[in-house]
Length: 483
Image (cartoon, one colour):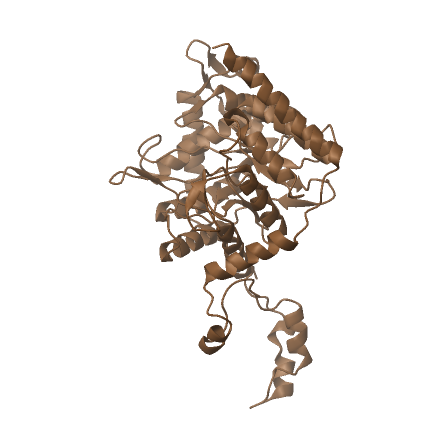
C-alpha cells in the first residue's frame, strides 16, 4: 500500500483554521487596488469601501466560490496531445522558479542569468523523466527589464514541449504570454486545454496589487489554470505563530479564489504555498526551516479539506553551498511535500532561498524527486509479491537470482533504479573514476544538451512569438518616454 499521508492537523483543527480565515475575510477584509475588480466584487454582494479600497467577503461568497473550483486539473503539453492531472494522487514536479543567479557550469562561479541559460534549463527539464512541467527557471538579466518574463517564456517554449508554469507581475505580461501560448498550441480558446499555468500572488498582509489581481481576472476569463500563491513572512507580514501564519495565508488565497470564480465559475485554481519563516536574529527569510516543512504538510491538508489541488515549493534549500546542509534541506522539503500528498511541486534546480539555480542541481533534484516518489509508493502486498511459492521452490541455501520471478519483478520495476546516484562498492567506485554526485550530474547535463532534441515549433510560429515581444518592448518604450 501507499505510505499513509503525513498530517499535522486534526479535522477539528482544520475547521478552526478555516473559521479563522473566514473571520479575517469578513471582519478585516482585503485591500484590492483595482477599480474594475472592486466593481465586480460590489456587484456580487461583497462589502466594498471604495475609498479605502477594502473588500469584506461574506461566508456565503467564500463557500459558493469554493464549490465551483474543480477538484482535478489537466495540465496539457504544448501540442495539447498529452496531459498530467493534478488532484488524482500523483505529484507532478516542475523546474523553476524566477531566480536571478546561476552557478556557471564552466567555472563554478555565481553570475547573472542570461536568456541562453533559460534555454538550456528548459532543454534539460524537457529531457528529465522526473520533471513533468517546465517552470520559468530564472529571470534573464541580459534583456529589457520590462519584457524579462516574456523572453524567459520564449526561451522555454522553444526548448520544451512540456506544460509551462509562469509567474508574472503585471496584467500586460499575462496578456502577452497567453497570446504566445495560443500561438504555440495553435488554439485561440485555452479553456478546454491550456499549455500554461499562471501563478499570481497577493501582497501580504491582505492586499492585492493591481497587476496581480487584474492578472487573476485575465486568466479566469481565458480559462487558464491559476495558482494563487500568498507569501507571508512569519512575524513580519503575518503573525509569528505557525497557526496564525496559516490562517492569514489561507484568507489571502481564498480572496483570489473568490475573484476568479466570480469572473468564470469553474476556473481551475491551485491552492499555492511558498512557505517561509523569518529568522529574527539573522534578519533573513527561510524556506527550509522545520516549521516550513510542517507547513507544507498542513497546507496539503487544507487544500484537501477544500478539495482543491495543492502546490508547494521544493526541493528547496536555504544554504548557498553544495554541502551536506543542501542535501538534508532538499530531502526534508521534498519528502514533507510528497508525504503529505502535494499535487504540484515547483522549484527543482534551485537553492540559496530560491535566488540561485544550476543545471547540475536540476539533475540532482530530479533524482531526489525520483527517490521520494518511490518511497511514498510504499509496499505492495499480494500473493505474487509475497512469493511464498518461490521461497518453497528455492528452499534453504538456494539462489533466487536465476528464478523467473526475480527477473519478472525487476523488469516490472520492483526496485528503484538510479540515474546519477552512486551505488557501487568502494573498489568499483574507484575503478569507475571516483566521481562525486556533482561530477555525475555535470556529465548528465552535457549528455542531455548534446543529444536531447525537443520538439520544435514551426518557423512561422517562432517568428510570431518573437514579434509579440518586439511589440511589447516598443509599447513600453513609448510609455516610459512619457515620464
